[in-house]
Image (cartoon, rainbow, N blue to C red):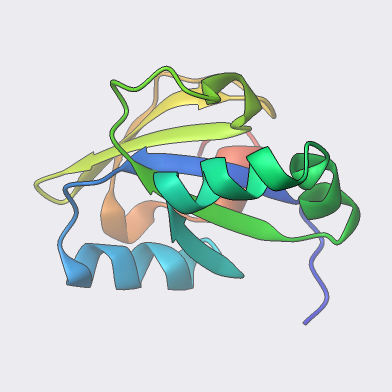
Amino acid sequence: MIKFSPPAIIFINNDLSDQTLSVLKSQLFIDEAIDGYEFDQRLATNINYPTTVHLNNLRVLVIRNLRSQTNNNLADIVLFAKSGMVSLLKNSFGPPGVTLSIDKLYYTNIIYNNK
């Protein structure tokens, strides 16, 4: 699949239902979903892991406790999902602070003006 939007490392809270996770993976065109421990391990073995993700035009969803401060600076996007709503806490591509229902959250919304 050819992607016309930038690659990203996306953090999201770890208390998601399987259904919510499935919807987000589909709507955000996620290449791989991993937990925070796996992300930290990959980073420990390869300090250039974020660069590799970006150079390979990937979207990696990291499911972790958002209270953790470990490697938070490496996230391009940070999302918090609860009760069918998703809040954009950090966005390296545009303004954060938007909250949308999960059925209206698409990658293009995040990247292009959050509409």
